[in-house]
Image (cartoon, rainbow, N blue to C red; front, side, top):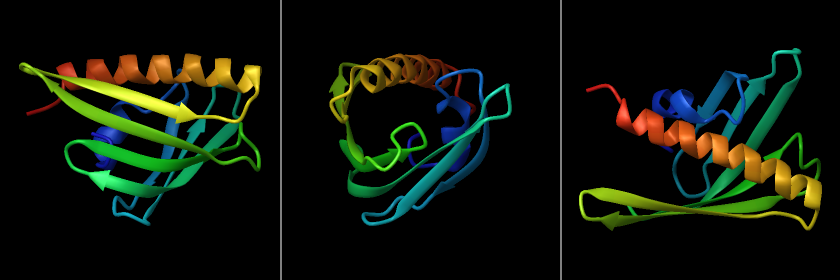
Length: 124
């Protein structure tokens, strides 16, 4: 669901923003980009490069966004089997800035709730 554009579109939104552009090249060194349009028309771009892809265990990528400006951060997502379920651990190494931290904490919380819902209701 992290590496397929159609699946990605179902859950990667930290608000009621519309996902207006998605481009994923899920190979190590490949890039991704997605743009969100807020209800007031503002567009927030997010982009980065895949650093590590270990299916189905781990995904690591750089994270840049309109919100971060010229600062780059890194996201690591790990998947751990838990009986018939899966525990997902997401670590986002952000610049030291309380406002950015709290904004991303809120955003990732909403995104991961959407991810869980999309997982429960995925087609097929």
